[in-house]
Amino acid sequence: MSDTTATATKWVLDPMHSEVQFKIKHLVISTVTGSFSTFAGSMESAGDDKFENAQVEFSLDVESISTNQEQRDAHLRGEEFFDAAKFPQIKFVSTSFVSTGGNEYKVTGNLTVKDVTKPVTLEAEYGGSAVDFYGNHKAGFEVTGKINRKEFGLTWGAVTEAGSIVLGDDVKLIINVQFAKQA
Image (tube, rainbow, N blue to C red; front, side, top):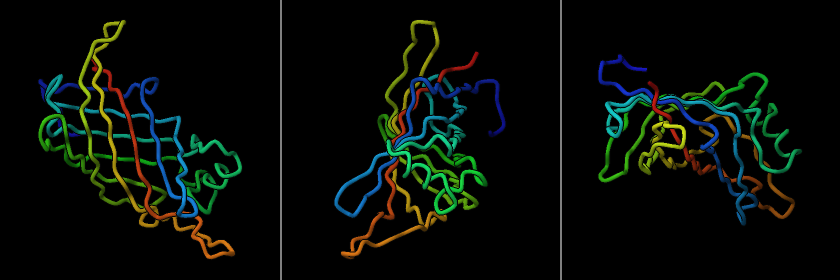
């Protein structure tokens, strides 16, 4: 995180009210949706609803991947894809958080998958803030974007006997998160 100031607001990701999904083309004719169930994150902002220049850190556990098909999930965790035994986490650290108007932001940062770190820019829509039943101040965001899997060392590929590509290169990210303000 960046240097803290007296006015900084610290937030911690609430995993019970957050989700991380991805979508990728299969056989170029349909889309497979997957998710990660174990992740953590934090954010530091200038105030309770001032997110311009916020600092965000996020990580997820590769072992928690699920596409609702165990054989495919085991393949994804294996050496041909994420190699979870050697690279157990995917990490993101923001370098900028810029308002593009209204409740929309562009979040740029360094994404690390396996042993490859590259800058990515994602769209973030601030859904608002509210106080839950327990008095916790929450802020919600929907973060979306697209990355090319091959740029991050996920280069496995195959072609069917009919010549169809088994797996697309572009991965769509859909991340819905709630952050809880820290005292």
